[in-house]
Figure 1 (cartoon, helix red, strand yellow):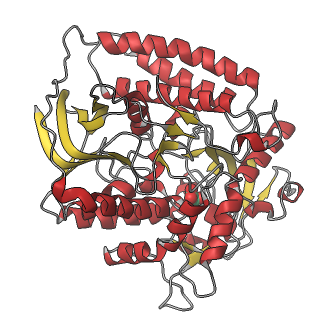
Figure 2 (tube, helix red, strand yellow):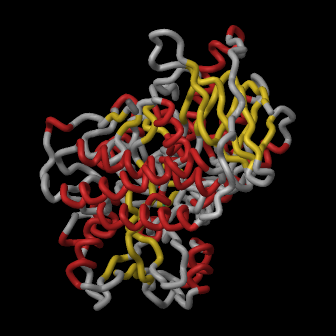
Figure 3 (cartoon, protein in one colour):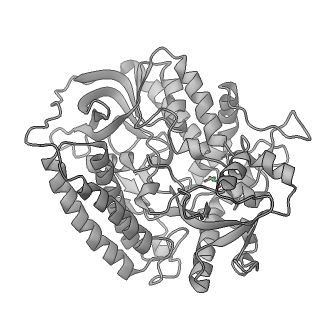
Amino acid sequence: MEFKTDFLILGSGIAGLSLAIKASTLGSVAIVTKKEKTESNTNYAQGGIAAVTDQTDSFEEHIQDTLICGGGLCKKDVVEFIVKEAPPRIQELIEWGVNFTKSETHPSLYDLGREGGHNRRRVLHAKDLTGHEIERALNEKVSHLKNVYIYENHIGIDLIIKREGSDKIGRCLGAYVLDINKNEIHTYRAKYIILCTGGAGKVYLITTNPDIATGDGLAMAYRAGAQIANMEFIQFHPTCLYHPSAKAFLISEAVRGEGGILKLKNGSTFMEKYHSMKSLAPRDIVAKAIDTEIKKSGDEYVLLDITHRERDFLINRFPNIYNKCLEYGIDITSDPIPIVPAAHYICGGVLVDHYGNTSIDNLFACGEVSCTGLHGANRLASNSLLEAVVYSHRIYTEISRHYETMKQSDAFIAPWDPSGTTESDDSVVVTHNWDEIRSCMWNYVGIVRSNKRLERAARRIDLIQKEIDEYYWNFQVTKDLIELRNITTVAKMIVNSAFLRKESRGLHYNIDYPDTCNEFKKDTILVKE
Ligand code: SIN
């Protein structure tokens, strides 16, 4: 079946929903989302959204903190406009019903949190459930819009690109989408296609990301021939709960912002050896320090200690973390929290210009799936939700400019052809390769890399990729197979980008090139041949 819409938005996090609200004033919107509409990386964001809202803060300081964190690779003009365009976007979120936590001492003001790399308190939050609150409010808003259709339990397979004559780049006409419950593949044709699919934490064995984070948009864009930038910069969050039966659970950086101190199992502190900001140093430094200390001591984890703060304060400020830890027998008001670093965020992504345009016509990218130039080699905490709302507004502005004259393409699109494929009777191939990719990336392409480790990873991923390709063309497409194909594609992109960067910078640390080198002060760009 072929569906026609003006806007096809893949993903229902803050980027997808905020864009849908605006795009619906122009035309019809279809949102394709893999699970329920609330399930997204946004939903799990604890810390909040960084923005200059306090009179004693300044754009200049937020810009500086972002640039310092970014290790020389941020695009300064992008950093400047994102930081400066933050206040109206925050106001809009508030008007859409997002309840940010108010200050207890000055109830007319918002409470501002602090996180690593920020020189002051600047992070608007809804206790420690900010993403959840944003998703609630935006979904509520979208539910009242008549021309927004949400397709839950649907997953994009591939983008549909039309290339004519010598036109190498092409134009995006839509996407093939699998209805997971009905096991049917449909064509979605649209004037504009916007990737808002989030990140790819599931490429790694240990991650703070939910199961949906399999890099679907990144892989689709790469296969379609879009430019992809800076995939070597994987941000490992320093503090993920360590517990044998806990599925990765984030302990927000805001805990360190409120005074949490990193300690070894024997109770001694160590961050003073690595940075003057100690436990509140930028994430790349904290994660690498923890990794070094864990390897040195042989311990499985280090501790995050906030027991010196008042019990009532902790329960009120971090209700989610308090309750979750309690489920595992850890009372954060009296016990230090065992933590390890975990894959958290991809600073690279589909390369976009100042208005979210990718290198393919009519294809936009917004949020974690994109690479705007804001994060450079290391993202400043809580800058990502901000990037998503500023860019969704910019994409809307860009599209509004040409909307009246933009015609829906009536070019022929061949329906999905399942002929020659059969139902797989060997799903263990998918499970096995899934586990292998994730362990391989964790062991060889983690916080500390080397040429030998990257080569090892590349060899293994190549083998798995061949096996998946064979499997893909012979068996009916399922969600699991699509996701495995996508994490493998993303894993290969990360390894290839890491090979190209023969230096250490920000989140990319290679022991064979331990220094930063001016020659590599540029983006790493990949394009599929
Ligand atoms: C956190 O709460 O530590 C996550 C915030 C972020 O990743 O920006």
